[in-house]
Image (cartoon, rainbow, N blue to C red; front, side, top):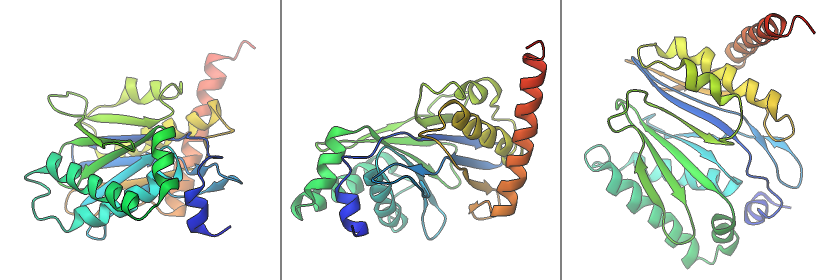
Length: 243
């Protein structure tokens, strides 16, 4: 089956993902697992980054949400009023994609939005805010998540996963992006421990002031995974040593 047809046929997908997005004192962190369930399980990036690095979107749900995010970052990147009219621009460009799919008879895409929970988290470089877009076949719903929030972070995907306790308990906006990347990685990897069938892999987008956002490379991820494994073993040993 071609990639295009696979995106049309989302009926076999299980919308399981685990993501965290956090605003740090000097930038932001977006972390996600990478496991995708379709006809066969595979690893795929679930975080989209625009060409300029000004827009990052984490997509949870089916692969249609990821396809939507890839289109949206491109459209947002060229909007001169993105920062001054963020909510309106997010709504307008989301409707444009949805209308284009409807007008071009991409019924599989629209059906996937109707039958599954698909949600995007949007981060704009240089702002202290996180936005959500809840996708549906009728109308995209845009909300500002961080207005008057003392804890500018959010989670996405499998929201009942017990690993989200760690970010809920230990996140602090006073920490740097470098400090928060371990918390982000540990949350995602522990989430996989609780749900190995549907959550797996690790991808992290890091942004620090005066530097463009970038995805951590393989060596950096391996080092984080090693530290997380050591932390997991320490917690396991200390909490359950009597067993």
